[in-house]
Image 1 (tube, rainbow, N blue to C red):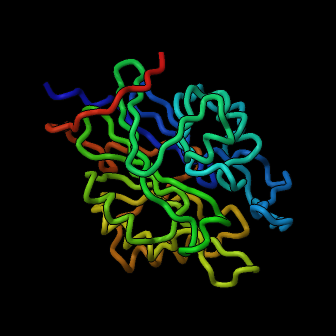
Image 2: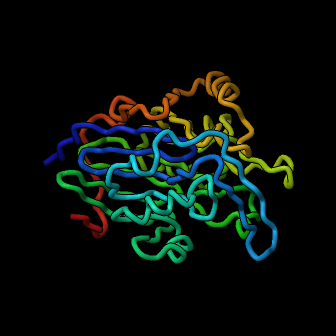
Image 3: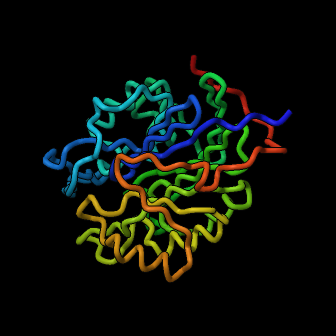
Length: 287
């Protein structure tokens, strides 16, 4: 029997890489960064005394106390404040489950569950059942992994839906990402943009440009790109206007989310019941 599609699936952009997802009875939150701009933030370079200041330029559109109860936090990585800050840690601690990298799960403990690329878990809330798979990500050029740390992306497949939601995490374009499109039928894609750069490393890039995101969208055959992580931290160097022009030149279907306003993911490409849902791994159930 074909599963019944959930009655709704929405994404509400809160700022940075933080998105509130409501899919049927399941509530997910991506990369919670909710501190106000005046909160001091630094990146501590591993095994060195180097501290790189990070500056947020606009607040999240929803205060931490405004969040609903969260079932699952999808945390691409825990080591950078533009993806996971003090208020975000508190929000994650109150969730039923945090899915993140193996290194991040060791640091966070508690409700954190490790995933490496292509590992999956199944989560359930009421009648909504989702399979969440970690995908490859690389937060900079090859050889920088020891400095920037491990990162993953996610694919969310929901019973009753033909296409999956892809969340890139902080990544640059690299060969391993093509396999995502071979393994999954991707619909909407939340892409972390910004072309992140720092004065100390010049033109070295640590997140997708819009040109690279357009290439990735073609590789995945994504229905719609929903940009996030693009204009509210000082180290994001590609403006929204530049990104709009790049997507237009590439012919990429793009939906820019208005912070705080839900976007219908069903009309963005999650529609149509599945006829051949894959076998699921053991469930992690939350009552």
